[in-house]
Amino acid sequence: MELHRAPLRKELPTLSFPFLRELPAPAGWRCYLLEDTSTTLVVCQLLFPVGSIHAEQPGLARLTLRSLLRGTRRLRAEEFHTRLEAYGATLQISVGREWSSVSCVCLHSVWGEVSRLIQELLAEPALSPEEVLRERQRQVAALLEWCQEPESLARYALFQLWAPGHPYSIPVLGSLPALLELTAEECHRWFESTFRQAVPRFLLMGGMVTEDEVRRWVEQLGGVFAGGGFTPSFPPLPQWEGRRVAVIAKESAVQSALALGLPAPTPAEEAYAAAYTTAAYLGGHFLSRLNRRLREQEGLTYGVSALTRAFRTGGLVLVEGSFALDRAGEVCASILEELEQLRDSCIPVDELQRVVRVIYGSFLRGLVTVQGALGLYATLLIHGLPSDFLQHFLERLRHLQPEELLAVQRHYFAPDRAIIAVSGETEQLSSQLASFGKLYHIPSACDG
Image (cartoon, rainbow, N blue to C red; front, side):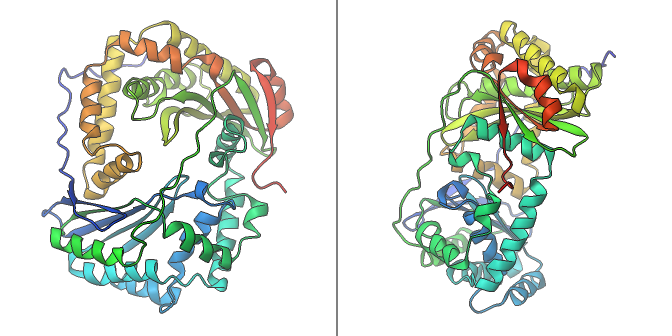
């Protein structure tokens, strides 16, 4: 089926990035303000340089930090959240592999009261055995559900094959045997010895908030955390080897889920803009190369995606999709064929222009709200990038040429370096995938 494409505008949209101002901060902190007097909201993001890879026991970091929401020494969980809801505030704690965050949105008129609740949560968390046990039960349930998702299993198998034994290969939720053994005492110990001590910490605030209010808040936080501390390390990722294939069991699944990985540069590397653009061309929008072929022409999927994922010590191009179980081998062959073509030919100029516009549009949507703008800046800061990185990145996109991308396509998108991971019925998948590379069977994180 021939797809009709809308005509391209000659001019790229103009993006105006709100100014993020760095303020003086106590030792161990970096503080930023993004003022917006057009809103009555205050947006606060606290970023901490520790995540699941910085805990010896799988799942401990998430269990500890999510347990913070279960009350303080003074306020039980129900009373704490009753007060928070009375102020109309939202409070979220997120835990990733490398970083963790505490985020809040509230009206400026109640920011003083809400900030004191957050400070109490971080200064005097309850972490009681009863509440930690309840949170552990919730995390076990989340892990068991995660282990039933074909897409999660395929991604897990990819990381297991890419970096076996590496902290990145362990899910943030942990593994079932380790999670069942975690205690409130271990949560206390990790919170005090690791979370409180790790630097640098970032405070990003935006909306209707003044510089004086931000300074008072960060000074109060400075009394909660150690002024010195240590800088957590990020273990290097292994070198990419030849093509390998992983199968992970999901015997009851009607469909198979595929996760294909390729090496990628980090955002700090010169080749990042070209690799980011190439991944978007491959699977970053509806009219992308893979979606046109696998969905529109061959009818093998409802959708397939490709994107770059950045870690502090490496990068990954991740191709993902769900397909009929008996067509998994055909899908892999089609993707590898597209990579072969990508390695040997330049991206057409009109396609490159379309992809750049798609990327511009995604950043433009992220700048619509204060929360979105702070989220973009937070991503830069946790990767050690300057706050003006996005401006330079988008300017770099404007001047990319197909011939320049071809060198990156050949280096990073080579099909003989791909790691292929598929979840589903193992016997049927193994027979289809054996010809694509050395085959490995990966146990689930819920096994044992």
